[in-house]
Length: 396
Image (tube, rainbow, N blue to C red):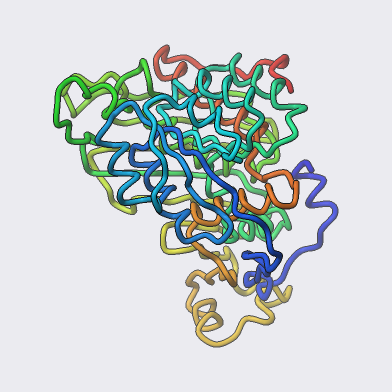
């Protein structure tokens, strides 16, 4: 549903609607365990395997990686006795494996996906889904009639808090949204320790363009996905600047990026990612005519532009206690969601439930392709120092 159609079909919400609950996160139905094969046991693959140990109905049965100590660490610490293979094709040939998690470096997704799709198994593909514009378009076509589940690892698209945030924005509670400012900053070199120089490009793959899309693909992509979700469309124009301006250590991907995207409906979105300053590390600031909504790792709050007008129109009716006092002081009112959990854990639970029910994931091949295209556009814009335009024939 397009954003404008969504707004037409819903009324203006009151502040009481800033609180909501989602029931049935863990389904009570009984299903057989879903056997998972994890391809890529670096930080992300191992982290996902660790979370799966605590999810009923999912089991990591096999793992694969070409770096032997990474594979051993995952098997020994993040699984309950999974089989380990250097060649991931051993997992694909195993009929007892129901689903695959792809957590290899970004530029290798296309090669691995081609073979996993042929295996007919359910797929959870980590973000960013695929490298390149045409590969993203081609993948949508390949998955169009793919019966098993295909989910992309933009985990905030599964977060119940983010679902509530988007619902509030779409309802018109903030009024016309002109601007979204996003940041994901760190004060560190992003480098992993390497026990042997031969593993440098494999372990620190995020720093090398052969394998990586840099900060744009690894961090900004999550927030690009959220902005697309809020706008209900994809940007028309992308510009930006970036550079290797501090970490002079042989890396090829930028150590800072500053990206602007303009949507056809007039909304502008800004994305900043630094590796030399971590103040207010993660934030999405949505600015509308009636108010501002800020999301960070601590949750989400709404700040209204005019409290007197809000009282007259009843926008704060139903708010009580500490939240009401915050409104009176002109402070933000928190958005709370019952049964909210860690976004990555929720994404894996949703993957399980989609497999069991046959439902389509919210973070799917189309939303993943849109982000993949925009990551490529942003990197091209920064490299060329030119505005890059979304082409009309980039349709699915």
